[in-house]
Image 1: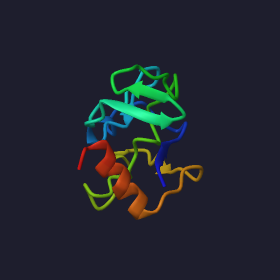
Image 2 (image 1 turned 180 degrees about the vertical axis):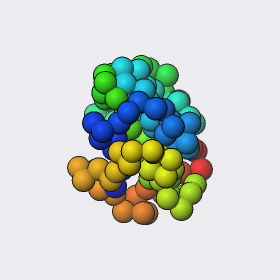
Image 3 (image 1 turned 135 degrees about the horizontal axis):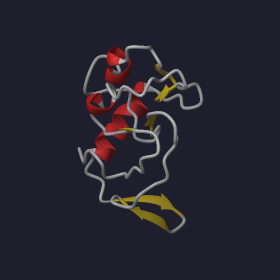
Image 4 (image 1 turned 90 degrees about the vertical axis):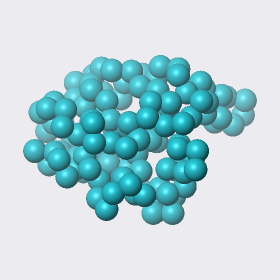
Length: 115
């Protein structure tokens, strides 16, 4: 499953530089698929293609947030999610709405990083 940041977040920013996929952003900041990945574009099917540089709406305006579609729980990079390991208030927790198996997370990592 992906990791999410709860509203207990104190906006310290410790998690952001730890993410190998650049899936963590400060509240209110737009994100892109290409940040920290090799994605030039994302094809969602049915003719919908998004540039990797196209700005996407923030998931949260108040707290740091994790883009769940870019989160791999650090699988293939580290033994545990690094955001959770460095969070001083334990607000980086598994997201029950985005459960994924290890094979799926590894495939997502390979897709995002052109492996």
